[in-house]
Length: 317
Length: 296
Ligand SMILES: [Zn+2]
Image (cartoon, rainbow over all chains, first blue to last red; front, side, top):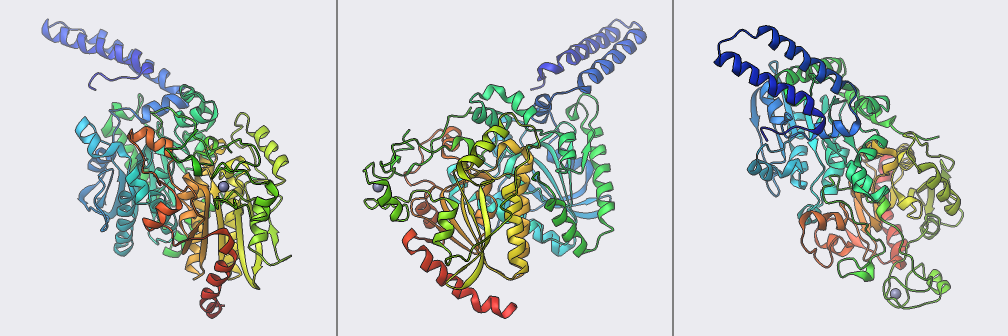
């Protein structure tokens, strides 16, 4: 994974490798290559800027799934302090595909609820690739109820290919678990801010996605079905995923226009995975800005605001 | 195509999807009516003249297989004569995404069904008891939920809330409508939000799950009934059976995702034979009447 790079990232990657080698050479042979190194760095910057200025929706999907992309816990440790994880749905178990707990945002108590993917093989399996079972959604609801009592704003990070499609999921009614979250999230009187940080995969994403403010990262997607799934169904050809990604309008600017998201958070040039720290700062700033806006609303105002926000979404005549 | 050894009750076929697909919901387009000669029963393969089946509420007289009903047939079954007043019948879909082929498919369905989308909503009475009703019609693009279904259902729920009425939704759906992208996903939230307000007003929601109910519909209003009823042998789930099988690479239990499976596992209050539906629903309404009257 250390060497993982996407097809369209390769030119940047190759220049980066060249730069690394040059630096080693300069150090080992004790020669001054400052000028060459500066030039190469500039070239990398320009190439990255050009590559990332016109990404296709499918390229963004690939970035959203990039194995080096920051996951929820990467953001949590950079943005918040005093994170106190709380586990379990009080019914069946603890689902590691969704993490949650109290934390402080610039000293202010909040409740975090977030999909969590794993970085290495073992962790990926433990987190089930961020695909939650019903108990994940029920834990999320329980923690939101805790947040309501504490008067803590709810901050969710969405990053899932979808809720897990398996026998256990169906036996314990994952559809019902998501549905109840959708309904109950409309009733909370604390601010709710949701951010799609990577993959916003259908109902499994929306299950923690009913917010007063919904944001999406620049290289993330939010979709009713995976591009592969859509292509397989509509064109009977899963390899037409790029076409489906384009057709379904699943990235920031389109979603902004349809009022599905309220803000698109810019990522560093080259994508979030190239600079976790910097991306976290950008996300934190957006969270603080949204929270400050919502602080003007009363508890009842927040409930009405959330209802009206979703009430107007749709295209009909 | 036999569905996991249960060809008897399979009224949907699943088209194979790539194994790396992520979204588990929304099998709308892969649920297509199985083409069979008119008089052959999907339940028992026996042949009964179509008019006999129709006269029997769409139930096979031999094996009790419940064939799909159209929205208007269902409303006729569940309302007093001439009591139904339809709402928003003219509301039409807009191809907001400019999705290839959507306009054509949509217009074809308008033509073949006589409806402008996959749900009929309105107010009616059953044994004199007024209530709000929404019925999905599977013939219309697999009753997939797009903006029109979401908006009509939301308006119906809001009307029920303001008029202090119980609400019945008869579901059948392949899930969210892909051709409307994320707009259709958001209808799950919108309809659930309207149901939250209806519920806060102390009013009851009744859901009747019919064959098949899947995806984003299952993961929103279809699971939000105070009382959840289902028709016998109806297939109900979040992810399509084929998607699950592809994911877990194992056999599924023989009764997987049937109404009976879900009743056993606690999702469904009652499985109701279509012939008893009208009476039971009327009885259920009557049980809620004191509570509703006390609030008005
Ligand atoms: Zn039969």
